[in-house]
Length: 89
Image (cartoon, rainbow, N blue to C red; front, side):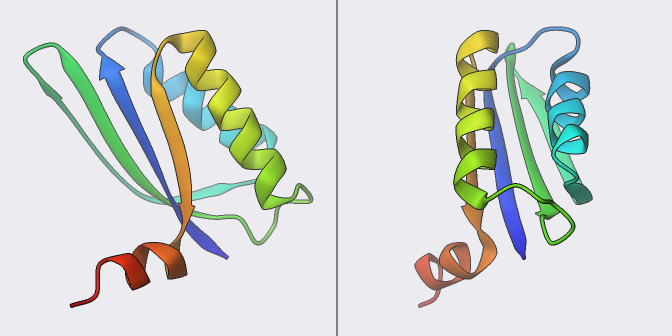
């Protein structure tokens, strides 16, 4: 299953490393990544593949939410099919 991970918050060193390490620890593969910093705020969107993960989607979501709280960032994950349905005209 594919999903989108979004990360937003004040920029600092190590954001990409910490988030991708968590994904690796949950056997999630990053397929595509886009990140930018605008006026001191970091934003990143990743397309990920969760099919090799032995963890449930809810467990992964909870781990990302906890990591976001620890890092004082907003980290969210959304299934690709839900994302696509929300953005169809």
